[in-house]
Image (cartoon, rainbow over all chains, first blue to last red):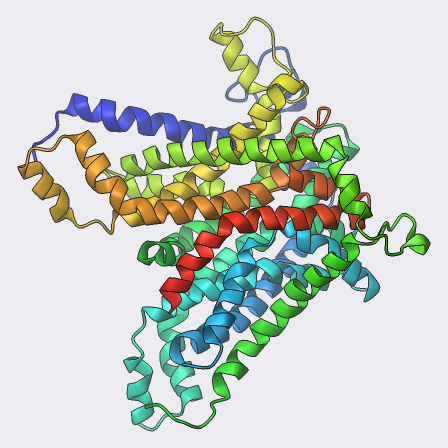
Length: 277
Length: 291
């Protein structure tokens, strides 16, 4: 391959990459800058691209006056329980799909697959009526159940992909050495699979943490999650952009941390199915 | 090591996931079908009864419904089409060697992990007619003379919302296609270099044909997600002004929030059938892979 000149590289790589990255990253920058501007600068006659005066007043106000800790706690609770429940159910199912041959296996697998096709709004309506009639409406439990509609199918799909790549000779060897299947699973498969389980868990957590349409209908004042609270900051107060952007920054910090942490494995799992297909 | 004896283990193992899915997906869908044949309106819970095809007939005579169908088509075609276009370019760039590539790649993916509501709110603020940064930039570049009320006039609202969904979806396309690219053996390009192929020839003769499958599946998945997405439009415009940004899923959601559940389930079922017709090739494909 011939070496490209530096000028060529600037034109074909750095400039287009710079433009796309600017487009992708600027909204986050702008959100952050807005959150640390004092109000009079925010609604002043000139738009400033870096605040003339820094303030964290909006963050203080958000936690003080608006009790932002409550929705944070609610989101954390719902996302954590959803993650644990989904991971348990999906890991078992994925293990069955990759290590056993059984009647109806293809049908069961496609049941999980086609699940991704159903519009959220389609499930939202009957689930709302069902939750209402069993008195679960406005509880965190109702959200955990609702989130299973999209987290379980996706996780089964992802974990099946990861498990396919683990040779089954691994636990067969352990079983020849006298371990039963349960022991082989917990002692041999689980430790090797752990990074993949964690990556899947991160995906479930982010999805539950971000979800809005179910949350807005299935929660009330005391069980509200972060996305609902953010959207409500617009409704009640006209718009308080400093509070809103501060809330936004707080919301995506945990998402970013988790995402950076699990990114590589997560992408590997998401793309495995389609690349092989 | 195959046993003839009936093995209950796999059934036991899939039962938790299966039971949950049966309860939260399949039962509700059946319920939705029943609801769509009732005047299921929780504002008048004592009057709920079966009304036959009334909801569906109402839909066909509802101009807002047809506008929403048209908007959904525009939303999906331009949204997904341009996500694909820019995602493809981004991924061709990210596949080259340069310093800090891993970091750049991770950063470029963040929009994908951001909550839809937050995306909507961030862009609503960027588009703001009084203090918005987009108007400020355009004014400073002398591209416009007066601020534009991007989200509150029908001529610009839908385009502005579509830009936002494109922004959200570029990373996903880039991730998926990048994974496909890395599966192409380097020797293919080297052989092409020896034969004196140009960059464009390599793109159209090697890269795109090999990626056909990945592109196809990614587009189908994306079409389904984009068609179903509610939160971005809802938090930016709520479907307005005068329904100009209201897609079918937003219309369904709006109807559901005012508790007209019968009418909204009818529309949701229609949306499902529309999406199923897109998804069938995908399901068939994964079936082939499974067996």
